[in-house]
Length: 226
Image (cartoon, rainbow, N blue to C red; front, side, top):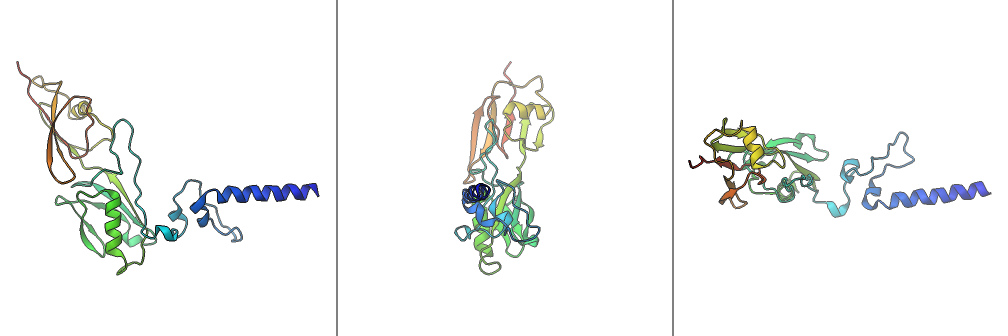
């Protein structure tokens, strides 16, 4: 009898543990299904079944903001050269990596071109949802993630001016190092950065070597005064 009470108590504890995961528990496989494998803790619910009714408009997957002053993915706005990973769950023909072109457009199957320039990942997800549903797919579940940022540009008194792949959290001085370092004429303490804002307006900033650079920035290293 004592053994049976122990089993009952253990069963109650296990049930409470599963229920404690909220929506996550809705996607657990039926324990009576042969060969069913429980999902890994912390995995997104949509990867293990249909999303709950309250999430009918899908969700955008965005990476957390990198440390050291990196890009905040919740606020990062897409631009020419960004590579975006789009996953429409259950639709392999609509899932893949897409590039934002020089005009800010992204070509997507079924719906054609969509202007993604200036959008966040979440806004692009919503735009895709509204274009796909209900004419093509009813209530699609969509994930959007920036896979590769657009390059940055560095000009002026560096050994190898040009465009380079963006490195998350990089500073102006690290950008100079990537471009081969300063020339002997360079002004090393202050740089100019031209940055395009969300509305397409260009900002001209006077920055220090420790300033964090963003994707698409144009850094100019000026000649020093003798």
